[in-house]
Image (tube, rainbow, N blue to C red; front, side, top):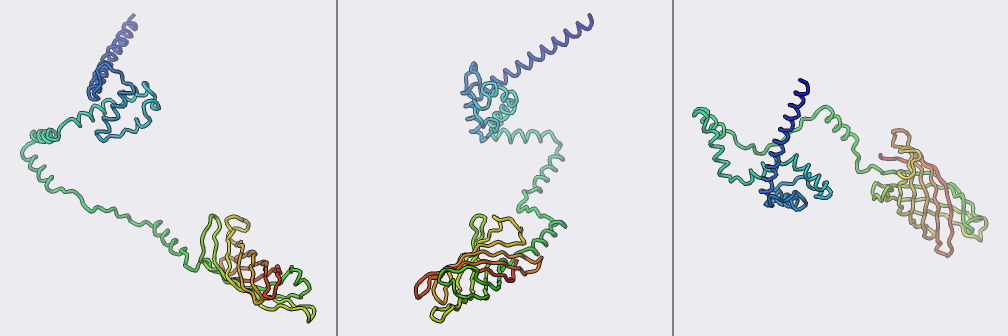
Length: 316
């Protein structure tokens, strides 16, 4: 029996508190309606939502909770939940906005009026001494890690010559066109220079270079012309290292196109370079192949494909 009486009292107390809090909340809603300029009997629907947005915007307040709009924010249920969680803040903002600045100053003076004269004097002196800080700068002290990173960055910096390669080798034609099929060929020297000047196009970096190589084709008979000379001219080096991953950074892979001038005509070349680095030394072994297509000055066009091997000096 006693337990039943206690439970009944608790339930009644909770009910009374709920009624009291509900009535307080209703009064706050009425205050909010008054601030928004809507009728006391109106619901907090889409129109009330729009009025609230306008009022907050007039005060320079942007509430992220209202960015989704009325419908996407949960409609009536979502708006009601928002009001329950934020109504005190909203009423406080509206109240502060409606108070004139003179009343705020007066209120500040009245608060200090209750203090003793000595305390007021001290406060005035402190206010006069304290001035706004100007030209404030944050100085970051260098730690050991920062100094180490700077040192590593300085030592690993690349120079303007990074990417330069000067290579030479010996090559011999392995395949020839019909007009040169009966001619004897020999090992001949070749020079290749790849400069750091270039441009990146996607994953391929294209460098400007220069190539020069000799050629010798000896005719089997005196009645047939022999060709001894050289070809040289500009060339483009296409770095395929980011496309062909084989060999990693220790194996350079280049595709070459050039337009050399030959002693017996003009034409162009195409081929590839494989350069293998020897550890950290600025030296690399190279295996190359070139296809030369030549239009002779005396008429006719021919070609030859050569393979070569050599050494190069690389600035990395």
